[in-house]
Image (cartoon, rainbow over all chains, first blue to last red; front, top):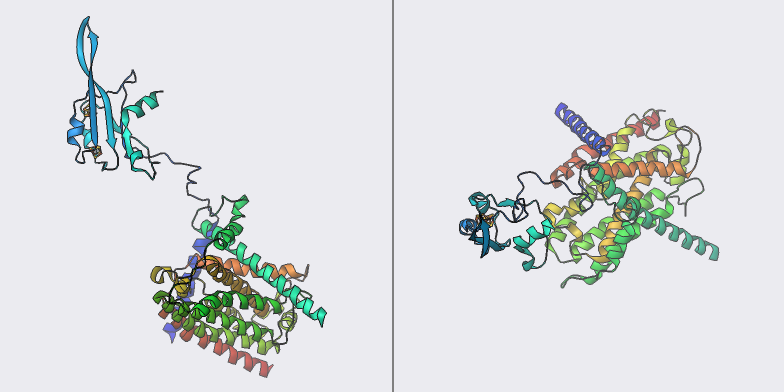
Length: 152
Length: 328
Ligand code: SF4
Ligand code: SF4
């Protein structure tokens, strides 16, 4: 019989403690981010799709070595290059320049192989996460064009 | 005769308007309150403080198609939502909000409200049975056993009050408690020292009777999809939803009248209907607060609570009150 009443007593007490907790929470400020009116800064380790890094002149740092293309386990990188003549110390030399960098983000697993393999340090992860779309084509990124748009 | 008819029509219109407005804005209050407890702002986009949310929700529900699943019992399926809402509105007719504000005062108001409240269980049963859905049937079985077991302690506590006051008339019961909070039925030294506990029992039972969390086993989403209204969309669902909130208002009003002195002011100042409204909204806020604090119980826990704790204690208080009334 004593157990019966102590069970009721401790049960009611725990219920009141619970109600006390929610009562205090009620008056605390809200902690949620009002997306899309507010956004938060993504953390340093956040991996969005890859992005080309520009040098001082705004050109891609990429040397078109093709390592990223080969390293990618999902084969989602397609590179293109053209040779251009450049003058170095008065002599005309040929140099390969990146003309196309296509990333098929529908297949990318964000593994980071491309970023780690790039010996020119020309790739990074963007902080982009607003990428919703109903069309697959929207996820075939032309990174060269994106770089130009960023420069503009 | 025609005047009486007019009176009745006006009363019913006001009762419907009051019930519907309450239902709409209690949903808003509930969502805002729940959000605050969970440290988020809740609906805040439509209108100031999200106040346009309820009418917009209503429009959305009304523009949806009312689907009747194949194989469902059409009549029961259609009757159930109406049956969920109508008794709550009917109960408003006899609730005295203040000395002069009562649509129709009845000698047997308490009985009438309990009679209509039990019709709410019928709505759940019809909805579950009529929609030809396993989840819905399970839910209505639960809801009915819950309603049956919680009606007993609720009625016993109500009888205790009726016995102490000597009347079933809600207005007489309220008037008997006039003159400050020490005259209210909840006050321990008045009728029986167990009255505050009876009040808590009554409050718990009205939570259970209105199928509110933590007793909302009839719509346990985690195991029964949406419970008895799984198959309902459109305004059919809307009526169930509004019926739930209208029932909450009825439950809070009844608790106020039976235990908290109706429209009586605790200190005898500014008498009027606002004390009644203040009391019911405090009770409703507690309903919401409880819902967002406690997890759902199991059906066994629920029935054990009723049969092993609430019924014995309320019976004991009934006997004690009867004894004390006889002695003094
Ligand atoms: S992150 Fe991985 S999958 Fe994505 S492009 Fe780079 S190598 Fe390919
Ligand atoms: S590994 Fe780096 S430098 Fe080589 S092609 Fe890829 S991005 Fe360009």
